[in-house]
Length: 68
Image (cartoon, rainbow, N blue to C red):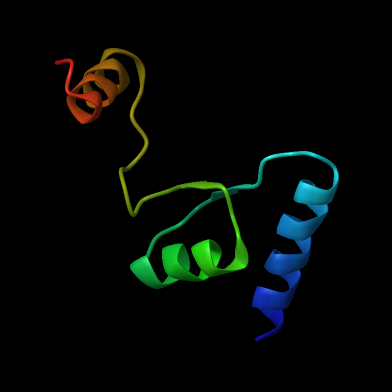
């Protein structure tokens, strides 16, 4: 689809400029898979977590890294 062509072009542009491509707003496993297939380096969004702030974010990061 056209949206994948656009996203793929943006990822390619980032890489050609020596940048890391980060997608935000990822909500489904299908979106995550498409981004991986297109070469996206990192992604964030509701697929992993709703937005959290302050101490809650610190706890979430600690839990995921195994240090909490």
